[in-house]
Image 1: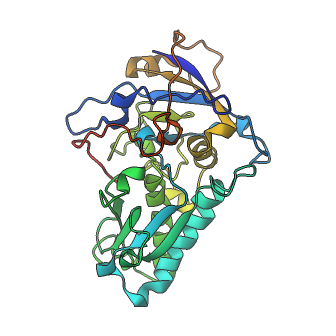
Image 2: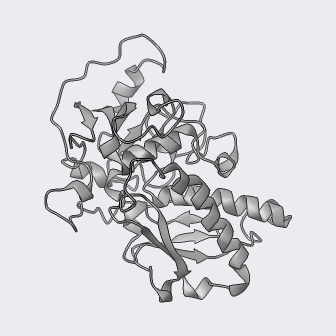
Length: 319
């Protein structure tokens, strides 16, 4: 196990020497030992929450190699499923992304050129087609890749606006129900588009969570397991009613604005996790040896723009 202090403003990054960690999956490949981070502290810019990010006790799970290094992130609608009569439904999606992830990432002290926003929202044939491509179909909504692995036609996001074949009798009972489902699903799927995995895929998921892991496993687990995360199938509120938990809001800033945040991170095996004391306990945890500092994000790599981590083409992707 290795433990590092992740200091954004000092450019001490974890994980980019961990290229093998970046792409393990659940399709027969063995996932490497994941990293766990806590002690989130804002070290630069203006405070982004009234209570200060140091008070955050909820979590998030991410795949470190899929954090976007472009601003803004392009979005387009696949032409074959672009129905002019569904302009209202497309507006629901764009607005829900605006009031959730874009709002969370609108941090004082971040230059406009660094701020994470989503641009385009037009037909893919009209441009902005090298980022997130959305196809509308009456089937299970999902993102076939996480984060920046969606770029360059590698994957797509699938959303449903009618819900006749999928969740029929629930999401299609009224216009209000369709809007609520569309907004909640869009917020969840755009979490995947930002590189976030399912919270129940974490190795520290409690036994009381009975939803099976699904899709790509995280290699970066931020804060203690968060029942309220919009990315958690074991959330008692489906997709957290389309809103972000405190952990969702604060840890996604850590992923995208590391120059403003620090956290303490360590590699933990499943056995180490089982030995960890409960959250809030004064009991000592497992001994952790001090380790090397690691680079973390392609945008900060000294090789310069365009550097990308190794890809594991066999890795399973999922919603």
